[in-house]
Image (cartoon, rainbow over all chains, first blue to last red):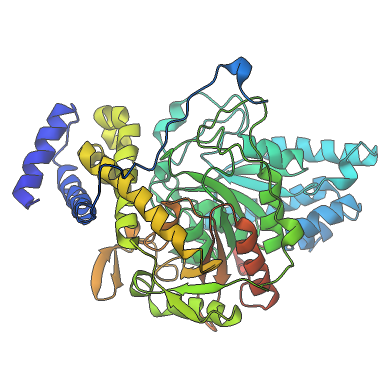
Length: 69
Length: 478
């Protein structure tokens, strides 16, 4: 993402989330978003296939009476 | 110096032995700890709360029970041993701060965290809560609300973070044992910079019930100590699933696998590799030298690269950033000014990350874990520095690494983040140069093989390569 793209995205996403960014905080937020965008670009370079599952796995929750002691 | 004050300079195992054999009382030992905290904490700033009344009551109770030959007292492994916990562990009657100002307004905890209960059931005595980075998002414990935790070996420098108070309290000899949490390196970084031993167990090994979360899928709890046997003992005492049903969804519900019985088995048959590439590139000379000393002592000859490590670290960063921002979104919306200024903008940015980035990070994370698992078919223990450098002066903004200028606060975890991302157990052992401050070395093993990391740590300690000396008594004579 280019710096103008980051600015546009950050402002729009903050508005969508009802997350006010003060003039004091915004430069730091843009800086850290750019850092994150760099990491996201690294991940984009890793080939993934449909069968590559995410790390977290949901575990069903048993009723309390049947939970292990 | 009193007998109890002298005893406080030893390790927890020896302290409990002295109490069990009635050479000193639990009350005297706890008083020595409280006196040392009172004398030194103004400079070290490790403790944010001292639970003196509770500790005195508990110690008196233990002495009474010992005098009355109450069942089990003669075998209590931590009888009378003072300990303290990062202030994200629940302590009954206190608000759980997690390093924040915001949480000061919350109701006090109704009960102690499960691991506090387990250590106290073994005879230990809680003496207080410890400084940390706000909401565990940092590696330096330069906490703007509580003041920075200071490195006991050089009070002008950081103690590391986010469990900086835990590392500092143990290095200063205020307590022989402390608990911390590690999401991306928050046990191993302060252990490295403060020159003490730290253990981050396998993800899911120790139940986190009663601790303030940061990133549920990455949070680990673990101990700090000044001897390997204390680390192993306290870890064994905290193992095992919750009784009465699961409350921590991340706990693996795995039966305890004690490590103390195998601690002295040495390195026979164990294959040790040194991690190169990324881990060499992100280490300054003192960190590389520490790894080299450990590698020589453990006869490690092979240098190997951790597959997909940069992608794994990127995944850990993004998952942490996004989930941390989401966890605190409501407070970020309404009271961002009450957050720690040093991490607030990172939290705000994290709340805005696209979900597609995080989904991809979780999928890459799994691929990375699978790739690294293959490496353990050839090695039992892998070595890497725990921090890129020794403790830096408080307030330092930048870190020069391999010709690159990086923001120091998020970069102190560059070498720890790749392992917590995939839940591997790691023991950080302190290695000292001829002059100057220590750097820790990570002993990394396959999941559920904490026993091997601690065996290697014990070998290094016996050889004098890894050691955790008390900080200079000038910080407060016990």
